[in-house]
Image (cartoon, rainbow, N blue to C red; front, side, top):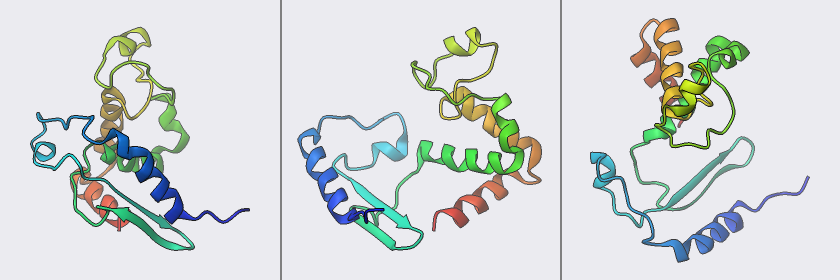
Length: 146
């Protein structure tokens, strides 16, 4: 297997994204995001065998917003395993993250755990199985993000 030069990969990503600078708009309706300078960009990868690779504003703290869905899904998978997929799908939705149309068409089974309806299902699993869902979730996130 070929060794990946992560510094080169990250540098290529930054070069590719430069023409897109100032093209997007931060969600001003989310107070934590409204405070952030829009030109921030950081990448940080922790490789199991080769340590840390990073570039840009990677050391700056930030509000994780929907990234929290990855942690919630991982914790729910640890609880239910493959049984979780009977409650939420794994397919792209093709609609907005907050759309209810597919949910109605597909008998209440969200397409995936990263749209709002799917994230609610994941939260239901955590609320149903954890003794202290808030504390247990925070502990899990801290343990797996350091």
